[in-house]
Picture 1 (tube, rainbow, N blue to C red):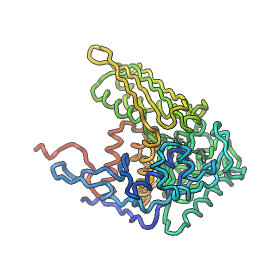
Picture 2: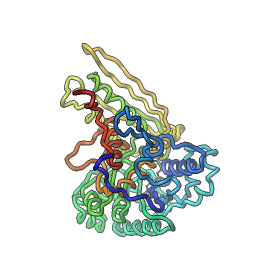
Picture 3: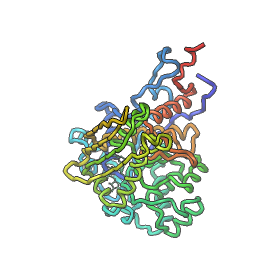
Picture 4: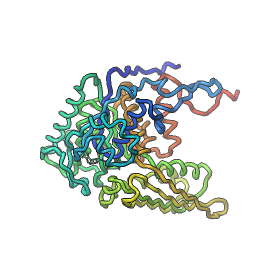
Length: 438
Ligand SMILES: NC(=O)c1ccc[n+]([C@@H]2O[C@H](COP(=O)([O-])OP(=O)(O)OC[C@H]3O[C@@H](n4cnc5c(N)ncnc54)[C@H](O)[C@@H]3O)[C@@H](O)[C@H]2O)c1
């Protein structure tokens, strides 16, 4: 224990987890939490629920569970609220998404059936492969944001609920760059009133959440809270935000493997990544503008890990290609292939092949849980604005202005755990072992 201890308010009352989107990821997350709290499953994949954290020297043998050193909300204290343009409740949506088998859905049919989506702030021009009836009728973007704020306030008024957190689990929107309306809060509010086309629905949800004091994380790659206007709002309101694009399958592997090549000074000539997936997410990504959003997010990771500017001989000519192919027969069971052309001593070429038969939503659900629990912790610890320490969970980490995103999975992991140590009033672990030397 050190004098670093910061006051973290106790998690009193229930935590309401808002998810824009009641599709594959969010229903798998909600059904999974219910399965865990009924003792029918273990929360595999969740650091917040399962991982230990070393305190002090290794020889001290102190490695309690993360949940025992920082005051996280209990799973039994989580409630759920969602928006979707399809009116299916969480039971019907889970059956439709077909990620979980009947045995993992039927026992919770009543619970899942009780979660009805609120009407969505949706605009077909930002997700062109979808259309649905459960949408808000306001035509002005500022009015839509106000309607979302009303939804949030009404939901937070549920008995026993003391606070909320929002994780965007809705579809990937078309690619947008920050523009003039994103440059300040005043410009953004004026832009909403003028129906500026650069303002997509996900930005309205983020604005509404932050305005209502609800921490916000973006699980998709689209521009949502990662621009000055909402960064300013989050800092002003004292609300933590994080993003973007859950790091699940192929990028998880990429950001685990690339640091190994660099650590051993092995060169990389080419990295070809291709995927097949057949869920609704895949259908949305079949639109070239939505795919561009994902492609930009997936492509950025190698540059910052391999640093070609420092190692031009090793990584200067790297050819990196990412493809996503919509292939309905696979449903949520995505398959991702990587062919990596590397070279070593005297330039001799070698190849690494990865064939990851993964399940998208099974990998994403525990990330939603961890983000909800850690953002709520951050809020109670008085943190506000961009939470870089949660980069571990994202393909395109949202970082402070002037900072470079960190993509190396191991550095991200160390940073996450050291931040938790600081929250717990403990010394960060540096692995220096200084006490071994006189
Ligand atoms: N599963 C993964 O491994 C993974 C990884 C990274 C990112 N993501 C992202 O997570 C998101 C969710 O993925 P999924 O597989 O659950 O997709 P999904 O299509 O099953 O669910 C998304 C839901 O969002 C709804 N929606 C779209 N726009 C909305 C809006 N404006 N308001 C409310 N609801 C809206 C859709 O109707 C749909 O039901 C996607 O953006 C995906 O790209 C997923």
